[in-house]
Amino acid sequence: MTQEHERSKVAVQCTVCSAIYTAWTANEDSFRLIGTDECQCGEDEFQLLS
Ligand SMILES: [Zn+2]
Image 1 (tube, rainbow, N blue to C red):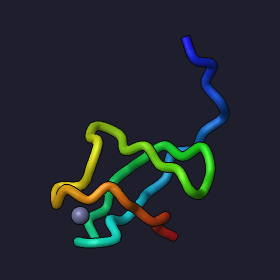
Image 2 (cartoon, rainbow, N blue to C red):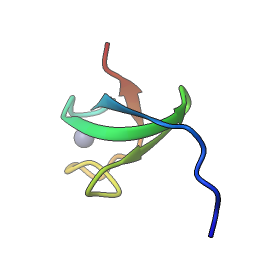
Image 3 (cartoon, rainbow, N blue to C red):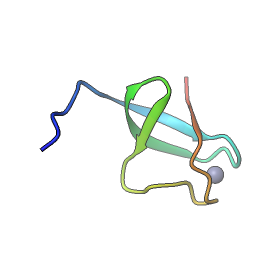
């Protein structure tokens, strides 16, 4: 198994349709959505919601 690095649960927003998802993040450039692989609109780029 891959060793899990420290990660944080964050809110991210789709860069296209502004939908908000919960994701794990290992760093500020990499998100992994929880429960889905991509946005409802098919986009897979998200920005950190702050
Ligand atoms: Zn979207």
